[in-house]
Structure formats: C-alpha cells, structure tokens
Length: 259
Image 1: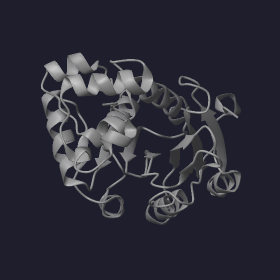
Image 2 (image 1 turned 45 degrees about the vertical axis):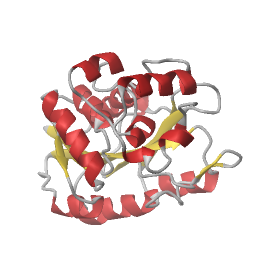
Image 3 (image 1 turned 45 degrees about the horizontal axis):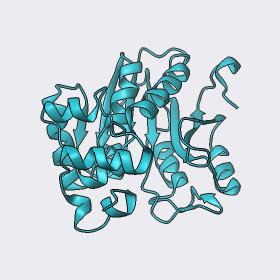
C-alpha cells in the first residue's frame, strides 16, 4: 500500500492517529524522506518519542519545519521593520498543528501567538502536543471569524496574520491555485481583518502554490498598500509553496521587498 496524500485524506483514515511507521512511510513514499514530517523543530522519530501524535490529515496538511522556518524568517524580517511597534500579535486562523505559528513566533520573540482551530479532533490533538512540548502558543477551539472578532489587540501592537485556508478544489494542476476558490476565499479573510482591525497596522502572509491563477493573485494584492511574492524552491519544480505578503497602514523599507 502506498502512503500518499490520497490515502491519508480518505475517510475514515483522515481522522485517525498515525503510527510512527506510517508517518515515515508517507514521507518516504511521497517525498523520498522518512523524516519529512518534521514538526516543532523535531524529526518524526524525536517528536513521537516525546509523546506527540498527529492525525492522518495533519500529516498531509501541516507545514513542515523546513518550510515553516523559511516562512517565519521572511515574516519576521518584514514585521521587525514596522514603525512604532513594541510587540506583535501573530494569528493563524486555520492553525491545524500550529507548527507555522510556532516558527513565526520563534522568529518574533516579542510576540503573542494565537491560533484558531474549529475541527475538534485536530484541536484536541494539537492542544495536547503543545502541552507536551510546553510551547507558549494559545490555541482556541473556535472558527476564525468568531476568534478574530473577540481578539484584543493593543494600538501599538502589529497584527501579523498567516492565512492558509483549506484549498479544497481551488488547486488545479493545469491552471494553478485560485485564491478566490479557497474555503473561504482569501479576500474574504482580508476584508474581515480590515473591518475588524481597521486602526491597526497589518502584515498578512498568505500561503500560495508555485502556480497561481493570476487574476486571483492580483485581487489579493490589490487590497494592500505594499505586497510581494516569495516562492520557496525546496521541493520538486512545480510543487513548491510560497507566500504573498501584504501590509496595510504601513509599508516596509524597499530593501525587504522580495518581488
């Protein structure tokens, strides 16, 4: 049996806890690396030995360490240039494993990190993992809309939001990722942020695919005063992920622009 994305996302497998051998087989079969699903700065062998457990769907959907580290570095490089900012509030509206949130906060030490996760099984598994590893991240079992509307952010805090909604059928291998067809559409999330935190400086980092439907990308970038795109060439050509970065109510120095 080949342990690939199709198998791990199939019901009822998607909600089951994976054994270490299954995690390693997924890494080997899909990426040629049994230690591919590294999380929280630990290899699968190391985090499994400490009692961390993940669901089948989390193994597929999580942002592994190598990529999450690069994302965290690029976000921090921009965030640290924000004027008159004493600290940051980092939000992940679709936290999942909270590994991306972990890496962003690791590169932004003067920050408060909050993740929202609606799926009960994913929330319970991730909350348990964060407790085992004693990670200073707040994970809230609530949908992103309710979470953002009840979040308190001080006037001198920079709002940093990592946006990676479920892609569903938004990704077409021929035409690329349509950011207007994610669940919910990326622009809908940006508009909610703008309406909810209208007086705050915002840095939004949206996860994208190497190939993106151009019109959907431009619709996202048009909502910001400054934006840039970064693709991380760490996987096979055509399978790489990246970010579209955008700011509101401030602009970073031109030296940090990635494109």
